[in-house]
Image (cartoon, rainbow, N blue to C red; front, side, top):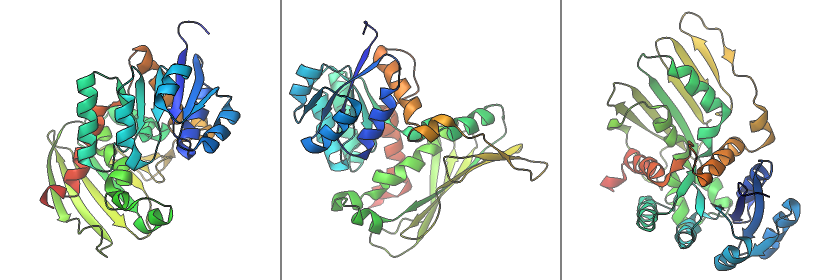
Length: 321
């Protein structure tokens, strides 16, 4: 295989674990070496499909038999904190599926322990790797005028409950799912956030209120609007408006822009990688390999992801709760 080969293992045997295996399998210089899961029968199905030699329920055995360089943590949300902390006992590069636990306290603990143990750990914000996100960001880079970012988030905890999520996850669903879109305020924002103003404050998880609204001000003069729609129909949508162009992503896997002087829609060309793999996963996997080799990459570090978790906490006004 050669010294440049990166040995990849996955912890977890659900749908996300399989999507990570699909992406890493097709990257040159990667060898899939292990799957660790509490459910051996599910892990074995993935192992048979992707020809992974080591299947185990134990991280020590994974380390001993598979000898991974890079480990992807794709477990249930309540398990993310304890499993990731155990991973930090080994000299692996880790790519952890967001969110970093059920709430801000879990994320802070995870980041703190990683710093103390000097572990190289990253977070899988795969939407940063969507072709649509990169296309829009590249188009915006040449525009110096102020930006207005609008994000419409739709969540349904009733459906999440039917999917079997634990009550502590449902009670903190903004960290479990809203965080995916909230991270885009930082992805498209060009400076730190100076102020968050609730227009319709978050009423609480048990409220029957359909939506809440908050504005965001950036230190450089950019601004944003967050609209959260809960337990009702609505799309995930992102728009970024400037004096020159308006970009829109709805659904967020696609994008188009309109010039200021007309209403003509200029769509992004379809992206073959985001059609073949779960969107963002292949490019993210390439950067994970680069990170493991010590090369430059754009992965979210734990501290970076922690800032998005803190923004989620602030946006929902949880400090006042």
